[in-house]
Length: 249
Ligand code: NDP
Image 1 (cartoon, rainbow, N blue to C red):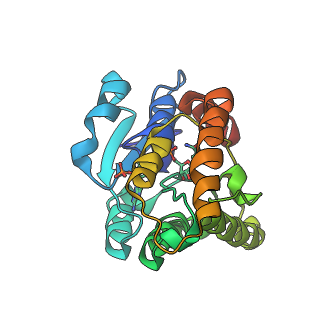
Image 2: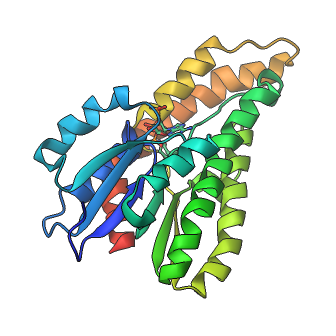
């Protein structure tokens, strides 16, 4: 349970990458300012987080299951938080999708929107009434540079982040009246499993009906250059966790 003076922070998508690192960074805060509720959709994946969290587990860090694509899971998770009191919500869970649109099914596109857009909407809808009652709170959203700028072959991912940016910019105005802050973080490339998962999906991709020029451009030009950009410019999850900590301080 949170000590008085500690801020309750709930983070989505803590099984790996940026979410895991934010959870650990806040749980290890030298002044113990945060009571971290790290969530993940499959608690069987908790070992990596617990190993990194060390002795903070059970003290400044606790775990809850949460699938941001499920209304029921979102409700259950927030109901499991004492008095539904969350000071800071960090919407981090997200999925990527890469490739020519002709090769991607509408079902796959919906999965991206269901996670990256509706996942955030669901979370905000669930925590907002209690934050409004207390007239305090901070909602942080992990967007991307691709929430600001379209990038070839990232059409659907970019669209999901643009949608979320639009939603949050509009919400920020009404939340401000209740003293609730809304912050967006827009990282460039970050070395996490995100890229690996996308490349695994690309390896399985088929291109029936896609014109040869587009396939060649995707496979021979886009993919090698995007890997180079990741190598050269990629930040670490620690960088983004430090930045997130600054945003909520
Ligand atoms: P990871 O793939 O390492 O982490 C993504 C996390 O989201 C995982 O914990 C994953 O859980 C979780 N997740 C996916 N779907 C759901 C769901 N339905 N419910 C709950 N959790 C879910 O990638 P990153 O750490 O890089 O990504 C974190 C965020 O950062 C994303 O929103 C991403 O868009 C954003 N971002 C990433 C960049 C990058 O280059 N890596 C750049 C800019 C932004 P599970 O293990 O169960 O799949």
